[in-house]
Image 1 (cartoon, rainbow, N blue to C red):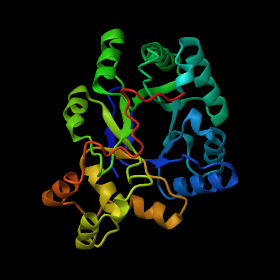
Image 2 (cartoon, rainbow, N blue to C red):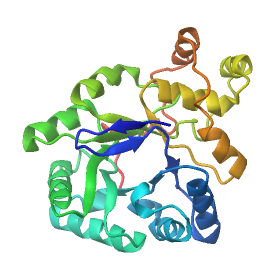
Image 3 (cartoon, helix red, strand yellow):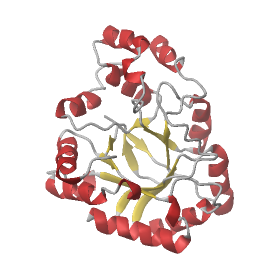
Length: 276
């Protein structure tokens, strides 16, 4: 596995590990296994209510803290500047760390009109050393343009819904031009039919790989950082076993062709969706 270079000088591995709904002792065990199996990005959020679980797993693992990219996210209810700074501090305390490697605004909540204020808080949190890198989740181009216009600072990362049924390829040129790395949440299409898709199954048989491995490799070859989640040790290992083959152009295009405009899993359009 190689690393992406972020615009602020930090690095980001090509594949991360999602921790949504990994809570308590069982969650700690799953995350410790992920770290021991080679994952170095741990993706959590204030609203996942499991930052303590993630922190405990970091302490229980044999991986040095400086080798782990800890990611957390600011909830919509704390977009006001002072509340955002406090929320970041609370996340640090819950995680039991001295700093957070990557901190993201979870949703823009454009109807509330405070995401620029939240972004200014993240900029200052980075200057204060509370976080190393800052970014966003689920931001549309117009939201990112506003951040750049108002602050002159671009996010290092935009974590968005991205999977074969909703590939968002039309945004790739924009992100590449801005130097923003795309992370994919639900890269395997959570609660969808994508992992049983016959078209991808045929490709998987061609390479003697699993359907999830083909999908994750498709992300990686597109320069996207997928954030899969699994409590199974064998599946955790399979989801990292992506670097001994290359998908041919025709197979990449076949997967691209599965996307459709209404492919969002839950219809969470950032232009109107609100998350608090």
